[in-house]
Length: 121
Image (cartoon, rainbow, N blue to C red; front, side, top):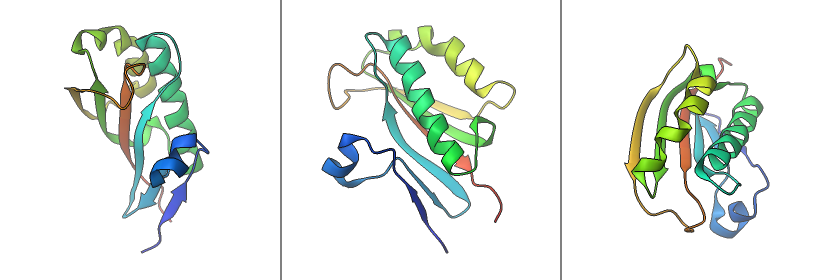
């Protein structure tokens, strides 16, 4: 089985020892991704852009996502993100879970992790 690792060049990839995405076993596994910005909506938009880039590098898209996990320190901040998420996944909504938990730094308001079908070889 071949494995393809995709790096985004983010500072934490080297510090922690992970990559943005791994293509293996017929799937694209995109690591939990936080975004930049002053509020949850800006951070959600930024995280989705980073995820989209990783999916594109893997030959996939949001239409191929089969699973998404959302992590937020405040569950009440999830609803303002719904329009962005609906736009990203459109007519191809994945199975989803939202978990309220602490993130690596209090400045982060949302982290998004996805699994997508990999393109056929």
